[in-house]
Length: 133
Image (cartoon, rainbow, N blue to C red; front, side, top):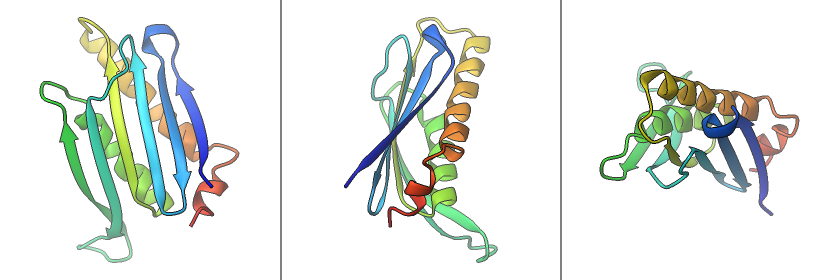
C-alpha cells in the first residue's frame, strides 16, 4: 500500500507543495511551485553511515538537472535531509518557476521549500513514514 502526504508553504505565486508517496522501501517526493510547476531536477538519495563517523548518517546522491535549470541546488539538500531523517531512500523531483524572479523572490521560494520539508517532518502522520519498512 502507498500512502501520500502533501504539505504546502506560501501563497499565490510563492506557494510550494511537497507531495510525498510512502512506499515499503522509500519515499517518492514531488516538490512543485511558482507559476509553472515542471520537472527541473531529479535526485535519488540513499542514506548510509558516514565515512568520517559511522555513528552519523550521510547520503550517496545522484542528481539529474534538466539543462538550464537550477532546481538541483535545492533538491539535493532536501532529499538528503529526508533520507537521513527517515533512514530510507528518497527520490525527489523538483520544478519551481517564476518568470523574471528577483533574488528576494528566489530566497522566498527556497524558504518555502525548506518549510515544506519541516512540515513533513512534523506532520501528525509522519510515524507512518518510519513504519513503512
